[in-house]
Length: 620
Image 1 (tube, rainbow, N blue to C red):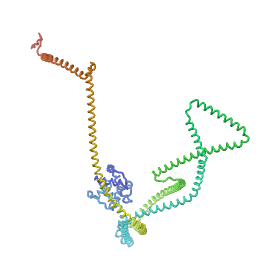
Image 2 (image 1 turned 30 degrees about the vertical axis):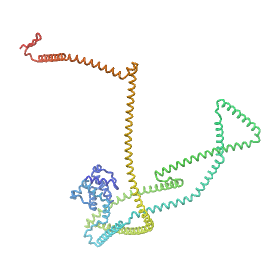
Image 3 (image 1 turned 45 degrees about the horizontal axis):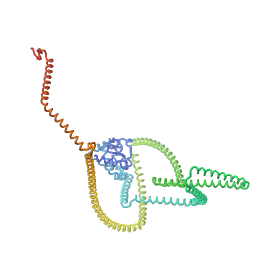
Image 4 (image 1 turned 120 degrees about the vertical axis):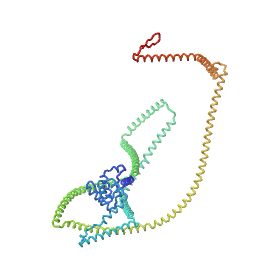
């Protein structure tokens, strides 16, 4: 049972249901939720059963589900052989009834869809025998059966065509891809036409910009840059001259400042004299010179501004290209520029107006739909009233059911005519489709013939290259195996040598440490010998031998004292033990007296105790 529920949950979590259940949530569903889930699954198989079960009676739900399950040829499990029990469980949404049905439906959904589709056309409408006696009804019934047989044969032919090797889906995909390529080519042709029309304008503007840039560059090369270069050279010359001179002190600087002030004063005097001498003659020239200098300064300033603007524009273009590359990496689309962006904005505006127009149409249609829905309700009510009146009249006349039979005959005849039209359209469409498919297949074959020839040659080359590759691979594997074995042996040798080296290093370090210890001990022994042989008594006292000799004497004296103490303890041990024994006996005697005194106080007055001369006497 758990496997069955697990399979149901897996199928419901996939397309087209996407319920996002797990075992716990599915098992905790209420009966109404289970019935709605079963109705959704049946609606996926047959679209007529897409119903909200809250809007219909439980009996209608059970009847609808049982009818579709009967068409789909569902057999209840052996445990529920009674149909009434199965129907009751289906009405109340019992889990033991619903779970097997869901499992059976979800395991064969595609097969059941096909069966439900065929059932719409192949379930025979049973006509009572008394109605078949009428010639019109009999002819209509015979035509109905012939159409059913024709549908069967057409369905078989359609299935055969589907399984005959012609994949209509692939052909349709190819056709749609070709149509998309065609649309793209048309768009490219239109874009090329627009580009050609805009090329002349673009080239004219480009020529103007190039001429302006040439003028600007010629001005830079002929006037601005040489002047700047000359000024830089002069400043470099002066700097080199200053660097070549020896270092100057504060007094030298003061002298230079005084000289500079004197030269400036002389220059100013000469300028004043010159202005006083040539002012009436050169007044116009001085004005022109001033204007020319002002214009040249403005020109230089504008040139510098233009150079800065160009540098800023190049930086902005670089940033724009980086942003465009980032946008292309994120979205995979090109950033619109210039005319393309304008066309895109115009297209959006046209779509916006089209959207508003369609929205108004939708609002009008919605209002009209509400009116028509209300009209339909009123007409249905009137139809029910008229049907009731007609049924009462038929009952009075003794021909009850005549109108129903007539409506059924009209419906059957209308269905027959619709079926004939549909079959005709289907046959025409299928014949046109077969012709188109045959033409496309022939065209594809003719197009693929040279490609297939090239493919054969390429396959032969591929086989030869594959064989050569296999041979080279065998050689490579053998060589690699040899090198691998050599590498393994070398690695083992290196590993052994490394271990030996590590051992030798450890031995070296151990020997070095032992050597250092021995050297330290030897140095201590030499120091000890020096201090011991020294004539100075203070140095002798510092010698270890003297220290240990003193310690030995101290320990010997301590041992003598302890032996004497031990001797005294041994001599006094016997009397001391006797005294301890006497004190213990005395303690026991006193304890006995205390207990006797306490008992005497607790006893009733049986006798009288007299204490005289350290003795206790009891008088009864």
